[in-house]
Image (cartoon, rainbow, N blue to C red; front, top):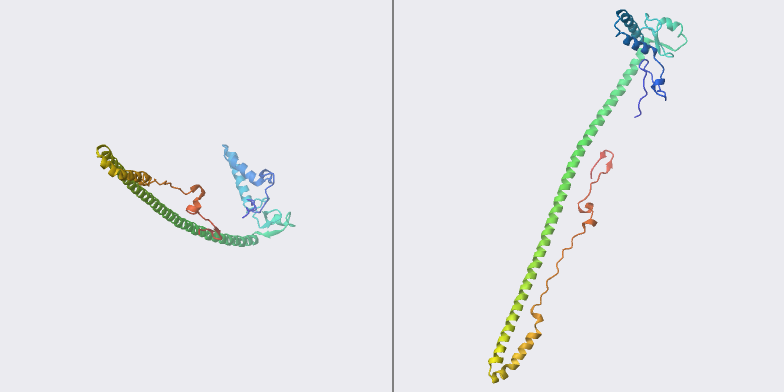
Length: 280
């Protein structure tokens, strides 16, 4: 709402402040004299003080509009709109007779009706202000309530994500444990086969050595083919004994840099509505 124009403290009429500032406003001689008298009343001289006091009282009466500015002992009876001052009957009939005049009583009655209308308008505005204040209070309370609800939703979503992440971690850990168990079992089985092959080779060598060194000629002739056949079989099947290779295990994490927090958790939306800020 634009600022209201200033009112004259004496005549209560609107006026424009000069572009050059308040220093160029018309001088109010009555007010200046009243101020000067007020300052002079502090002087120590009792005689001067009494004179100033009388003058100040007379000037104050004229400023109040009760007594005529020209005839300070006469009550004002009419108001001059051209000069914006209250006049006594003598001034009204002489120097102001061609001006627009209205009796004090009639003008006061009109101004009272204007004041009554102004009071009514201001009271109406006060009612509007109170209504707006109540609306803002309701909006503020609603905002606090909505924000509290959204805080709960965000925390709940965070707990859900933490639960899902914890569960996924458990699944991955269990998968690694399964790989470890199966791989170690395979390695142990391979070690058993290797040990068995080693034992078989060792027994073959001892037996064959015994035949070679201690056997009788007819024993050597009798068992030589079998010993050679067994050696051939052991040599041909050597690679098959282990039959194990440790698996290559690697965890491939999600690229979190390519996943925004909005995709991960969500985001806050603050759409504007006719009633102000609301939440979806």
